[in-house]
Length: 169
Image 1 (cartoon, rainbow, N blue to C red):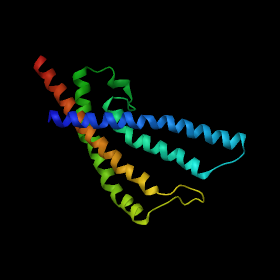
Image 2: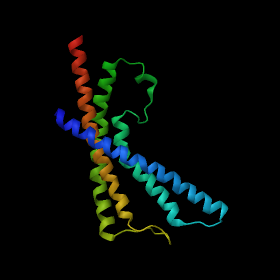
Image 3: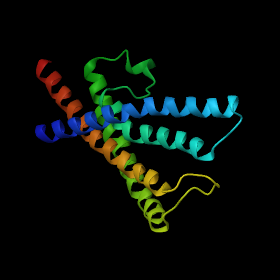
């Protein structure tokens, strides 16, 4: 199990580090869009769609990286005041009861959605929009597979913390 967790962590680390470079590309595309729209008075549907395609890719593929590094959104009002032992229990139960089932639900529910998009070779419905929207939609189940895997790693790490604290008590 330890080897599997190491592989999951390494996979999400590599993907997260790689995808993080898309933020630089996103900034450049947004700057280009702002420059052409407000200074040159020209607008491009493809550039606007490219902005949200890049953002969606970052969001979907880096979510597991954020989970791995505990950088996701959390309401820490109570959690931050708890002992590491209690935090480990919350992480363990929350992962098993909410994160993993939700990730599996999204993977399952998005299958037909993505398959249909690929079969139709879906493109943007807007004139001048981007082709191959089905590629972007494929990132939905892929992103949640990565979150599911990182959830398994988080549950294991939390369980290990619980076991270590039990030995200390």
